[in-house]
Length: 116
Image (cartoon, rainbow, N blue to C red; front, top):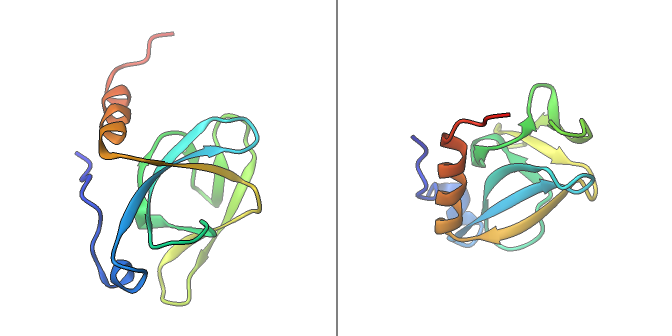
């Protein structure tokens, strides 16, 4: 089960005390990748490993990639505070702010078997 309550920790408090969920898709092919919890204002420059809340179609072995078009989206590195993160390539992702009800719809769709 995935906890949809935003993480509240020292990082969120430092970045303004609020979080939003972002639907992240591949900028090249539009494939849905993941739901990300972003803390504070400003553009998304890096994705912290523990803030990727629902992985839909992202490869995360050696770096961040799209499982549909195999485009490399970012490199795995250790941020200066020790947290693992992905440094995003410029224009790698499209993001859209989403509410909790949309997150629940994504979870519901992921739990249903795909028949081809």
